[in-house]
Each structure stands twice: as structure tokens, then as C-alpha cells.
Image (cartoon, rainbow, N blue to C red):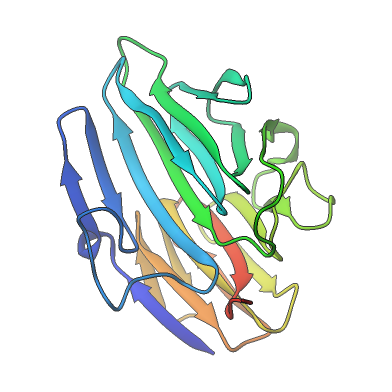
Length: 239
């Protein structure tokens, strides 16, 4: 098993006043040649948006874009006539395909918005753009991983890639065993809150991340009350 460790404090950081953002992988003005992507996982941004502020209409093309609210209210709008608000317990999935414009705003005038924005390289380029929100609350169970995204329709959301995303809220002492869905895939595990120990050796704290590959599976244990996001993606990109 091989592991790439990305500590929270080593991420790229920019504070624009209305936006305080941290980048696990190279993004915008942050460039690290050792952190361009993890397999098909291209972007993992940890964003805090000031009340009433947000990203104006901007384009995406040939990218799978996933937004996961952690706190507050996220309003999405796009040029295919979608405009909805999601909160923790919802996720937003967009296949940009041949091209789409969208915006993302904090829908509250009083509270900050915290959300993760994730980009994944698509399996097939130039597909028809699509967008949807998904309520994942019914899947979330204490001390279990809730699979929220897959390529095959077994989860509420699917994306144009051989990728599986799961979320887990874990009690202290709980151990989780994870098996790869495809042998050539890897998993990027991101600690949203709390602290975990990976295969009894490596401790990951709040907002730390680790890429795990060249293995059929692995175990991790919550050292305290924790919330984790696991993103299983292909490690090689097809042209």
C-alpha cells in the first residue's frame, strides 16, 4: 500500500475577503508541481463564503463538479435553468460536458457558508451537460459509510467516471474496513472533522488528507468523534 499525505496546514490558501479558500491541489494562484491531482481527482477546495457573497456566473467544460455543503446555505444557478438551495445533508453534482455556466452563492445574509468543491476528470469527454441536487440524509447512518456517488446508479448520484464517494460520521473507537471497487483505483480520504488513524500507523486530523493506492483495501479507526469523506477514483487517466 502506498500513501500520499497532505496535511491541512500545507494546503494552498487565499483570502479574498468574501472568500476564504484552501486548496489541496494546485488551483488558481496556488501551484505545487507535486500536487496537481490524485488520479482522476483534480480539485478539492475547502471554501468559506461570506454572507450574501459568492461566485458569479463562470464556465466549466469536461469536468465532473461535486459540491458538498458543510454549514449554511448554498445557492446554485446555471444556464440550463437550474436554481436551487442546498444545505448539509444535500449534495450537488454537475457534469459540465460540452460546456455549462454556473454560479454559487451564500444564500444567507447572516451566516457564512462552508462547502467542499470537488472536480473529477470525466471518463468520456463532450457529453451533454447535466445538473442535479440529491438528498442523502436517508443514507447517513452512525458508524457506517454512506455511498453517495457511483458510476452505476446504485447511489443517489452518479458521475461520468468510475468513481465512488462515501461519507461517514464515526464514533470514537469505530473501525472501518474499506475495499476498492476496482483494483486499479485509489482512495483519497479527507477528514472533515475529528481525527482518525490509518492502518494503525498514520494519524490524520481535521482537514488532513491522504491518497491511498496500490492496495485492495485498508482500515482506519476514529480516534474521536469524526466525519470523513472518501473519494475512490481511477489512478490512470484515459485519453
